[in-house]
View (cartoon, rainbow over the protein chains, first blue to last red):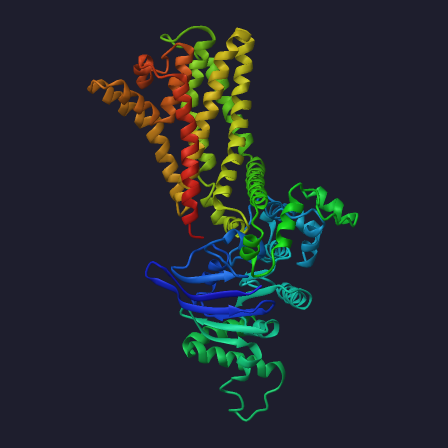
Length: 268
Length: 329
């Protein structure tokens, strides 16, 4: 399912979160959005699921304008917010039960499947979420997103707070979705290596605008630093450097440095 | 606690397409019928009168189901956090103490005197309990991160608000019926079955005034940006409605010759006053004193007072349902 954002503007008081952003995500693609803090990633995602309305421009998912019919869009979209949380008094199993019931999904074992898929054990799912670690909460959040087999997955910093095993499992889930379904996956990340590994397309956001977008291999190939030091660039190391260089070029050295630090520290 | 139906289905390898949910097949079928990119077009081309009617019915059913799911979840959470137990215990204890020490030199005798004392107690206690139960209904769920999760589901925000209200109302009403029901049992034992009608009138009014203040709490919770703001506003609301308004109205009535319409307006403007007048006028007493005593002869009917209480329940919830759409997550 295709996603289109056209000339979108969104301000909060004096802060311009999105400044004429235009972006197209092809149906079935795995799309990574890279940007420094405050680039507008989370605002874009909130607009995608109708949590907010753009001041100008339009956002549509599968041809449906989110502002006009957000409910219909949300039927097809699984959204994992950056700060996901659940009532302490519910078990993981019950959280998923609430999701299933609100969505009107059948009782066909999909909850157990979702729990298994994100790496939670049945015993963990039976515990109240008040006892969950941050990583377990993220896994449960991911399970809620996977539950309806959505046409579009919108994941805001999905690996934040996950341990290395959780990150690997998340990568495996996204790769499985890309390989076996037609779902469109959009996620944002500070980890450039993650975007390179999982995404076929990416966009770099900065100051509320798209500074670069396209197939990941093309962005990486456009590396202005490639070959500068005379070394042969090979394998994933070359690609990671390429995307990082593209990121640096798109957002400027100072802003990119923050992203690079994140990438160095968090990349698996 | 896990979901038994889900588990049994999984364990048995059961993949029923319609599952155990009566609306599941319709909901899934609706999604299946809509092609990518063109739901509006397909709807337009297939828009016969029957289809439109079916869609409307499905939409209403979906809305009811979603309100019910939210309400059950809220009820479950309130019970597990021991709100239900605490409120029931509070009403049992205070009701019991009131029965033990009730009595008034100016009130009627027998069961009516006891019910009048209970009314005075409930006028202070139940609004406070309702405000405490409801002040974090929306803002608290946002703090948890749950509101962002629920609002990303295909459910209207107003439905979440209504479901939240109904779930918490079930807890409050249950605690009121059980807690004050204990007092009612003692009254019947002491004064016989003939005292039941007076007590039931009190019980109905108590549930209504609780529902009204729960609605007010929900509205405050929807407007507030932080839980502490909501709590402060709830306490101010209690002070205004329970303590200040009655005194202020009494002063106004004493100072000016007000027409009946103005008197009525003063009563309708405060659910506690409406509750007191409704219950005490049913007992044939003004034992509550204060503004209520002044209003004894104002001719307000039980019907209009009941309607005022119902309005105090519905209007805040409706306003909250509208305002929650503007809430930024």
